[in-house]
Length: 377
Image 1 (cartoon, helix red, strand yellow):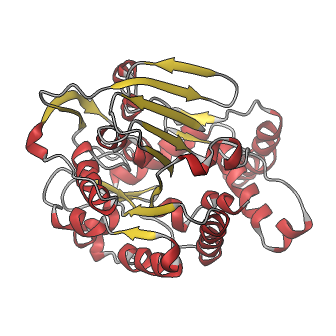
Image 2 (spheres, helix red, strand yellow):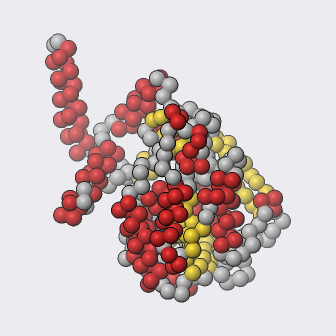
Image 3 (cartoon, one colour):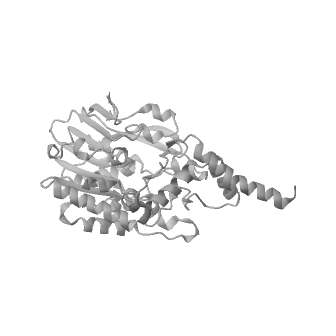
């Protein structure tokens, strides 16, 4: 068989056989390697075809479940690393030897849908104090350290415009400024998309001020270095080698304040725990899940704080390492993750029973996902 025929056979296998195997093979719902849910087959409808969401969803579905996907991803990564490339699978190696994700340009459609959802929520829950805190990612905070003098869109501008669109109905909390001011400290993980416990502390300090309670000073906490070998999602996705991360747990020194119960509802059953920290995860790859465990639709935290104040948080996983700080100020906190439930939020929480509602998301959740729009249902 000559070279041309061999190439023709190989292309036939790739174009015909692999898609067929992909179509009939068992599909996973979660990638432990990348620590994320894999795309599910999109719902088909006329409107989904017209607005291209069906095809976009189908492309994501095929990409996530293509036969031998991990092998092809690793092969691509290894080839690109041999060329000393500082970018792979949308992950960039900064001049600070840390990894950041090159986020796509914000979707104006999704931004608008999320804004409409929040405005409808506040209209339906008049009298409820609603606050929003949007976290920038390390991409923006370290934009001057990107390789190839790469430029990116301004997360600060998008956040400010988003807050302005909410008008007086929602109090927008600026957590970009304190994070930028402390950019020389260890506020984002080197290998993961989340902020560190220190980054979460600075956000907590700003949120506390906005919600009108006094935050504890940083020097009032004991800091436990719970793990020194955390490799997060950016490391898995890019295969670019950088130093591992440290996971810190902050505990208020000489205090009797504590969490008394953590109730986790996964949509099928409820389980009760006595700590915010799920330490078994420190022995697994996804060590960030030491904070509250894996992402669940609903988590209720009860404490011995004697003020009868209750906080409701709609959130993504950035909230997990920040909640331990907030738990020092509320007798009860409920967290709802709209990504993992098809229930209406009214079925999960009585809004009127909470003193404050906080929307806590990172900018990618706000600009490139539409889960927040469910607040308008």
